[in-house]
Length: 566
Ligand code: OOB
Image (tube, rainbow, N blue to C red; front, side, top):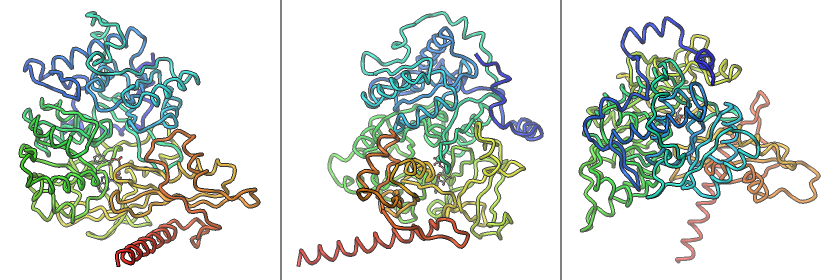
């Protein structure tokens, strides 16, 4: 087991004057995530519901205590890393609370991640355990676990199924015990890493984001105040709940902090979601823009039907993760009858919200303002000078819940953070006269596929490892539904026996076992790339090139369909 001293060296700490400032302003409390359920234990209140079961606060607390004790007996504890790879289910929270309580840090993998990403997380963090679920996809998860074991990447590995018989991870580990003695001796301090979020990334490999109990709890409590989360709140999570948005903004943890109820589902499909809203009288949910648009269209159609579900309990719909267009934002209140809240956040920290009582114009046309008056914002030009009020520039931020450095990434941190600790978000924004941010674009080399982030460099590296590829450049191409999709421009090596085909590249990438959303939606095999005056690949020109080509193709398509009809 690692000791606390080692654990604390794994992240760039806030300088002591900032620690003092955040503590004296009572932003950072002497509390840990593992204690979040405690104030609500005597209310016999339902804390969490999934497709199979529901647990009260007491049950969730008890199950996670037992699991925590089991882990301690197995030799898992303070400072250990555990890769958590589960769908939205009650057992996920049983697991997370167990890990928080013993001072081990979960790495919050997404259900869509595959062996390619998971093996990297295990290796890079020297994780002791991997916990997946057969329910995610039997073959996939079994094979992830088997490969991790074959390659000796972890000490403990579990996949578990859950249905009426297997509802609790604790059951699966088959070590139910009332002996909480070991657990009672564990002392977890709030400056420790509570969990690792994953960065959407711009580099060859995903970066890990160490979030401490101090900073994460503060962001949750701050979010609760803004979003009016209280014991009557019923939050429906249909996005993968390990992502920072549904986990902490204010998300699942916000609901637990306030004593509300969390409803978990693995499907955001409108019919499923609307019936859950009706059944559990859901008051708030969080979506990415494409899903929000799907809900809007579906409800607009169903509204006048006789058996239209009653979603009148829904007070707030949060939309974030990617830019929500003004046109779509305008439809939320009239169609769904609830308040829209735009959320512009990042797993590294800073989260901006429109406020529930903001005027309509602000709600529809801005991405909100920061949680805290202690969040510092700078908007800079390309030479790191402040832009004039209202002008577009690079967003930098520093504050009580924004990390000071990625985990074990000293070199990258020098670029991603300024010497005085500001994080370079890579987003292009402007600030209106009321301090609200409007996201205008992105300077980072990333594709945002409807909220799912793909680092161009990660895909380029994989493509470059193909024996027939000479060079690769991955860019975003416009998409009506997702906002962006992925286009990979590839130059083949000369003197190949047979021409390089998209299908070969596709097959090759799939052999790397990556998350489905990372696979390019289109390949363009070209002879050369346009270059900037500094000799770098001109990605802007490539983006224009593919966007013009798609426009032409769709014009041709609509002409031929008119001709056919005629
Ligand atoms: C959230 O977190 P990440 O880490 O997956 O992605 C962060 C990036 C931002 O830097 C920005 O580029 C983009 O996603 N983004 C938005 C946005 N919200 C996030 N771009 C435009 N408009 C928005 N509303 O995506 C995240 C974390 C916490 C709360 C909400 C979202």
